[in-house]
Image 1 (cartoon, helix red, strand yellow):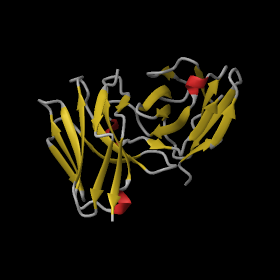
Image 2 (cartoon, chains in turn blue, orange):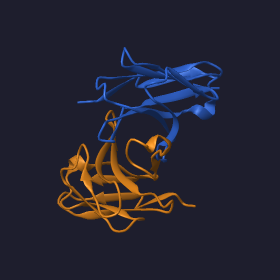
Image 3 (cartoon, one colour):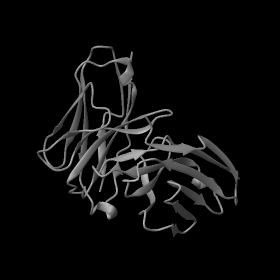
Length: 111
Length: 117
């Protein structure tokens, strides 16, 4: 059973637009929520992460919004660029320190 | 620095054959991991090694064995490959593992694409 549910599966955005990817979880013991970015033929790389005591974290054009009561978090990419085209994975860390990943979102930014 | 290096990049096996996937990291990290990535499933943890000399099962350990050869190297072995093990395998490492590891992200290799026919 998927511990972290991610949507949408794929997303197409015009250059300059906002990309939004959503994730939901059930286990309230999860204590760390990273997002990873993966380019074709490469391994995932950490993009940005948030702890549950914070509602928002911003790094450049990337923002995580975290809603603890709804058990949801999302990644917003502002001013999306063709170079942002990649697969994005949300994840959540369990008390046993294992990361559970979402199923991934393939983002395509059209020039 | 090479980071996390995986070999081979590609492999085709017949059902029942065995093979070992190799992984080495040069970042002096304590913890190492093996994940598999399947379409629509995301990344799932097979085994991990919190520190040299220890290994533990992850979400999907059946059909696999691991060896933490030293601090740098962590190998994954398929004793009798099955078509269900067709996947992309990623090795990862992190400096720390545990409640204080917020600033210790996973560093992934570029994967091994394995096909079992």
